Length: 373
Image 1 (cartoon, rainbow, N blue to C red):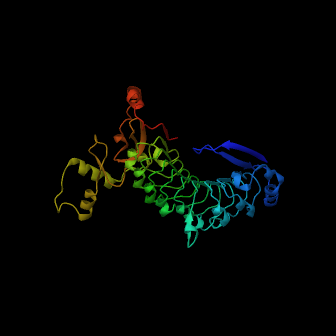
Image 2 (tube, one colour):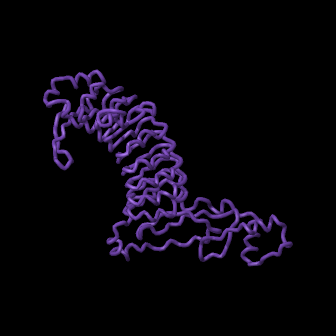
Image 3 (tube, one colour):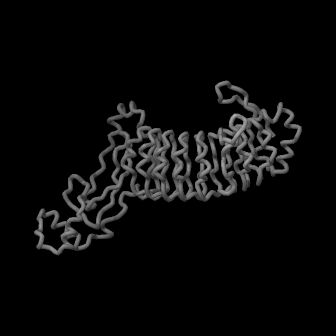
């Protein structure tokens, strides 16, 4: 056992008492023995302890003796074999709870993560929480734990490395969130409610099954880091360029970073499409009785090529092209565009970074890292 003190980060610089039982191969029985041992006499009382490190042991359950640490602020339970978090853990005044890399399921968690306190010492119990950081990464969660949305003071939520498929639509209630980490799950949809997290600075959604992002992402004005690599994204919301504070955007291993999603040569246009393009390009306008109604409707369904230098059209056969557009004045992000032909691809403009270093250096919101591969 290591017993040491460190200066607290609080403004009053009070000493923070810590017990480190990490990496001692403890099970529940031996941990209870250690907590009851004379070593504890080195401290005034168990109420002096603010940090308890129990990481990398063999704990399956937690001992009831934890309740005696009435001033515990930090509890690290990572890398054990925990199958249950007891309700009693919610009665501790925790600020940080780390329970990553265990065997926790949704049913393993307390039904409520709020501590129950009597209002003014009497009457009905009122739920409160001091928790600011919760780490449940690397467990066996199948669903987003709805009870975390009660934690209105929570700033850092880590749920990566589980099997979560959906994000709670009540996520908007967590207005204090600075970091939301859900990488390495099975998420296939991001709810619009995520865009209501006005304080969010980091959103980690990498290694999931996401095909689209909601337009509300553009409302995250304080977002600095957006990790989207290893998903199924084919395009980004166009308003994402409005995120002036974004300094890190990871997009590698998504379809949108492939220069051609569909190669025209592998699927040539039909004779009907070629004829339709010629008719539209000629500018001729057949009269009401000149063509069968089905052909007339087909001609009216033509789409204009987005290349401003091309007057062509397309119907069913198109080239899906990733165009890199300016982002925050320095870096470029890929957006999907539809072209009538691979010949309509505009050549990439040479980098203008060397000629605008002075202006870029003065801009505080320039992208520092765009990961595309």
